Amino acid sequence: MQEHKEEVQNYERELFYQKEEVHKQEVKALKKEIFISNLKAWIIGFILIAEIIFIGSLFKKSGMFSDVKSAHNSVAVIRYDKPVTEEFTTTIMEKMDSVKEDKSFKSVLFIMGSPGGSPTASEELSEYLKAYQKDMNITMYVDSIAASGGYYIASAVKPLIANKNAIVGSIGVIMPHYNMGELAKKVGVEEDFMAAGKFKKPISYFAKIDKENKKYMTDHLLKPTYDNFVQSVADNRGLKKEDIIPFAEGKIFIANVPEIQGVLVDEISSLYHVKAKIRKDLNSSDVDFVTISLEDEPSFASMFKVNVNVGLDELSNMLQMR
Image (cartoon, rainbow, N blue to C red; front, side, top):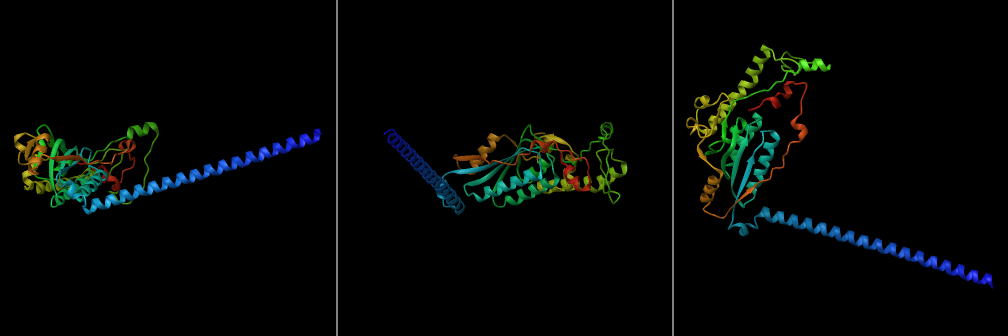
């Protein structure tokens, strides 16, 4: 009797475990089914969002929303508030290309605030702005500084309008050089290199530049770049080269001094009045000034990068309009 009772209990226990296992499997299958269902829903949602964005971009490019915006005028605001570099200049041009494609923008307000930088980047953006004005009006306003390469760029647009306290000019070229030779000796660093050609390596961070190499670099690099700079500004301003020379040689000016009016600067104003004039020119009080986001941010490390060995292939990065 006792044995039979134990068998029944064992059977019931085994049956319970079997039911428990079946229940676990059912719960597991249900969870899997819910997960797959949710995953499908998320995927479908992402696809729908992507399709909406894609269709919206097609409508925007085709101008199908132009009627909606026809009662509203937008002006793109470009703030050039960094040193002139190839990277930042490329970013500016790409953003301005996008502005030109967006039919809601009626013109561009270019606010210059740069102390200068790369000669090649300055030339590229200067020529770009001159060509750009054939398709869209640009208002050039110097709010704080347009020096050297910054002025090179600003001179491409007329009239050149400036805040009366803005710094303009500094038409010149400089190549910084640091002699770390004595420091290198103290820490046990010695320069070593191989080069073929007398002037292949005219500059080193471990020694002063001798007279021969100074003359060579001045005649072959600095002076030609400076001449190009002066001639480009003269052409941009509709003046002769000799008209610019008295205001070049690296001189800086406060924008409202009388001697540079009509030469380096056309008008003295303020941002408030410049915007008011744009509204008047567009014959509308309903003007939206849209600041264009510029994503080109230099890294912290790149700001303090030092090239120990300087050859001719690196000199273009050292040559600056400041």
